[in-house]
Image 1 (cartoon, rainbow, N blue to C red):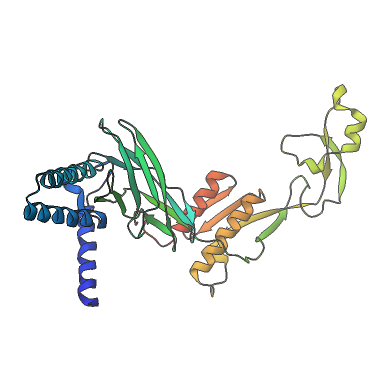
Image 2 (image 1 turned 30 degrees about the vertical axis):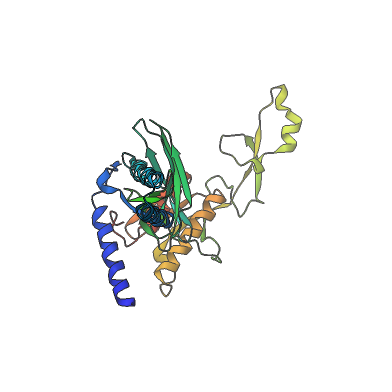
Length: 331
């Protein structure tokens, strides 16, 4: 029993892949892409109709024939309406923010209803979920957005999983469904190392004498310049001069100090470490440097980023770590 079932599952997976292979950009769900079968309630209703028909034939019941045919007509109408509840929708992919490996990647999806027929109870979820978790109602001429989440395991590009849309509206006698492959992908960063060593700080002489070491070599005060650290402000002199009365701000001046350079170099890490562990350590250092507002340079193979700080610098470094050794267009 296992072999035939496994063969059937593989055939179904291959068929789904072929059906959604050309999905790119916005996808229109035509009636040819909507499939329908009776539910358990629908099979029970069919058995009831059969009993009514047999009883009406045996006892020649005119009202029985009328009831059977009316109920059968309602089932046919329900089958048509269930199919129409999916057919005609336009599907498109939205944003897919970057995440760290092990987190759930959010994929934004948009469902547009360009027709005059409102759609109700359209269930949407990824194909591997047995029971769909989200349902949307799309009024006539409106667009609804939702977010589906998929688990991540490895760094790099992650393609959006195949999506299954289904509905049993209005009576629940039939279940219509369709498949869609969103044209979207999310970038997965390496997961940061939990117990990473401290940042690799390097000291160098400071031209103005202010820095993390040698700051006890006080050389006097000078006028405040934009960019001076607040901790170097000479508060006693400022209190005497009273800036509110027109006195200037002054800052302490040191001699012989050093400042810390921060360079995150992949090749400088111990070579015996696993590549993924080194990437995880670099990821942790990038996040820590950004959190502490410490400008840092970045070195990863041929990628060289000068000393910088900020969202764009952080995103560029994390992207380089996520795609290290992976083709840019691989998904």
